[in-house]
Length: 260
Image (tube, rainbow, N blue to C red; front, side):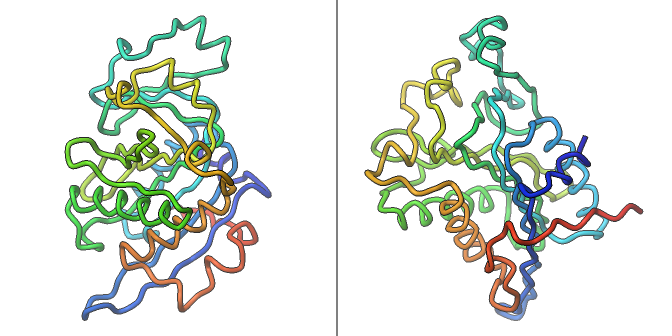
């Protein structure tokens, strides 16, 4: 299944961001892969493949950026009790349900939402799991500020919050120090899908999007590029030695993962 995702043609791109020496430590390089709309199960399979390759030292850290078709995912603590719609109602709206290995409860993915899956070695970043999650949140807060949106982290509730509600969710897993799953930033999705669930068990706190928060919403591509730069800054990856982020990501092809 992962192979069909990697062959997404003009919707797929990748770029290498080389490492640099920082405070006497060589920071790891980063491969950025950008897809269009990709099925959840296929992308999960690709994450697993990349995580195995990262553990074996065959690939550097990777970041998958994409959108999903309408999908409800249940984390390890998730329950169908937090899915309000019947299977028949979900089918009528074209929504699939996937149980996953990530932390957290229930959330929704769909077109207009920027989903990111960093497959990274935490030891190479010098981060614990909590510090890594904080870094993801901090990068999104900074990216949103660039579009005039005041956002913040909440120590009791993972994700990124605004006065209008939650704008980004985070749910990760890690296997022997390598991360899977990641974040979902609402750029301009159809927010009515969130009415089908109790998102992250916090539905009463509200869900919003960038499009709801600003008069002139940026494109998803603009948000993606801003967020990539904020993630690079947060985690110490460097783009200054290689223009892997400029020219546009979608001009660069994704390398195949080499087998053992």
